[in-house]
Amino acid sequence: MSDHAAADGATTILVLNGPNLGRLGRRQPEVYGSTTLADVEARLQRLAAELGVVVELRQTDAEHEMIGWVHAAADAGWPVVLNPGGWTHTSVALRDACVELSAGLVELHVSNVHAREDFRRHSYITPVATGVVAGLGVQGYELAVRFLAGRAGSVGGVGGVAPGA
Ligand SMILES: O=C1C[C@@](O)(C(=O)O)C[C@@H](O)[C@@H]1O
View 1 (cartoon, helix red, strand yellow):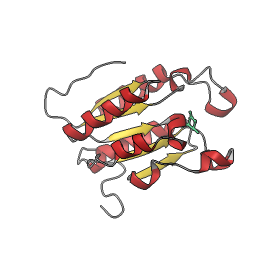
View 2 (cartoon, rainbow, N blue to C red):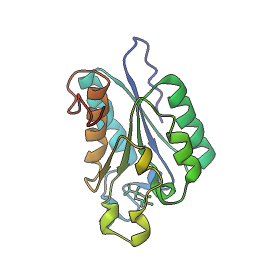
View 3 (tube, rainbow, N blue to C red):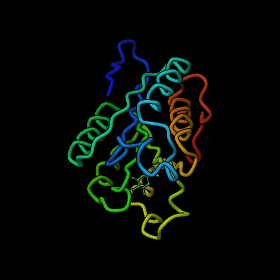
View 4 (cartoon, helix red, strand yellow):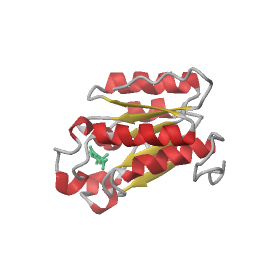
């Protein structure tokens, strides 16, 4: 996806999407809705301009690639919105990488994972996340970015102070 490098010192927020999320809009629309990931990115770029932050959205079906992106965010001190897709329920390795995200991590699910199959109720990521958004559809992405932008001290966020921060 697009590469919006921060040239002016603006906060960069990575929005990372795991397996099958490239199929948003076509995949089980009764569960995930009809909005595509490209639509989500367009909405987030408008929001980024409003908030004065840089948002970079990426998607991969390869776990090693996702873990590399998390390492890079940790090294850069960037906050992350992560929809881990199916890795939510399976990946100790992704959780271990996420532990290093000291600038904030919002775990995001388009669907309400707690109202679905039992296996979706357990997340390896939740214990190491700042917070979780689930079941608010793709609107959750905008809420999560607003929260992290506010937490980073940018204007317009809803989350100026995270509970316990
Ligand atoms: O791929 C996904 C998408 C998901 O993370 C969501 O956005 O609702 C929920 C996961 O259980 C599922 O495996």
